[in-house]
Amino acid sequence: MGPLKGIRIVELAGIGPSPMAAMMLADLGATVLRIDRTEPVKLGVERPLKYNLMLRNRQTISADLKTPAGRDLVLRLVEQADGLIEGFRPGVTERLGLGPDDCLARNPRLVYGRMTGWGQQGPLSHAAGHDLNYIAVTGVLDAIGRDGQPPTPPLNLVGDYGGGGMYLAFGMLAAMLEARSSGKGQVVDAAIVDGTASLGTSLFGMHAAGLLAPRGQNILDAGTPWYEVYQCADDKWISIAPIEGKFYSDLVQRLGIDASELGRQNERADWPHARQVFAAKFRTRTRDEWCALLEGTDACFAPVMTPAEAPSHPHLAARKTFIEVDGVTQPAPAPRFSRTECDVPVGPRGMTPEGTRAALEDWLGDDAGKWGGAAGL
Image (cartoon, rainbow, N blue to C red):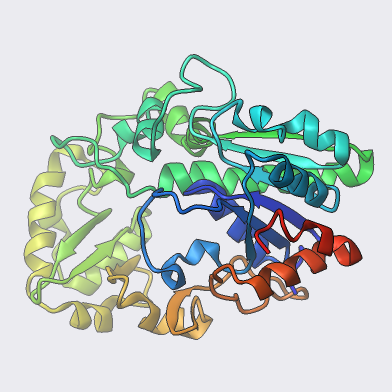
């Protein structure tokens, strides 16, 4: 079910942020039809289909968008859609005859979602790039890392998925909501550089106020000894984050450390010694022993779990944060809804004649038969 039941989205196959946006909409109940290439293209990190989890919850058909038949099939599907997602370089869909003007002419209420790294305009708009490049130019990457070390690539969570896919999904929902009252669709230009900069709003506020120290010397970037990770006796790791004084005092008391030995919590000159004291203390017990002492208290503590361990953590297990689909453990749809609960996801599905036929019938009804050839049937 989910709150987006009844919403229909056409997804022109891409990698990274656009599948993330499509997955989020599909997880919440939207019907998403992915239009893939007729021939495999080596894009992104190759893996067996069942593990490409961002392709879950939707049917996939193939079409050659460079042919009149493929183009016309997409335009016919667009007539039934609330939104379209594409992640090509600027101008590509226009050359294919599938640009915003082409699609909105068929469906004036359509929300046309465009996902790029640099955006639709600007000096770099046609240049190749990936997550790391986009977050680098925004100033956000420079702030991530430890003191005296180079900027640290934070996987592709900040750019592709945070600043990209999530902002595209958010923008499309806003535009679809507006279209219900105006009757008019529009283009959503979701650029990773824009979304990443937006994620960094607080960071730029700190900079403007003169409160941002160099990388690795601030509260939230491991600059302090009390917002940090430490290694335990078994070489596993824990995290502490008691920013507020009362939580810091709670941690120090539970650790059995004399507060005077640590110096003043917010005095930068005292931090190096305090870090040594904390490091030595946490090395005296295993991660599980620290969990028994500190987890669930106001010490702002949590163990650092590996991806293999996280689904079995008691809190995440109790909330069913992770689920198993087709034998693959994966994150459950989020967020949660009190009334329109989301269904358990359907795992990624390969293209089959039966699946293609069912998808076309679902979207086009009695008109589906005439489009089978364009979809490879």
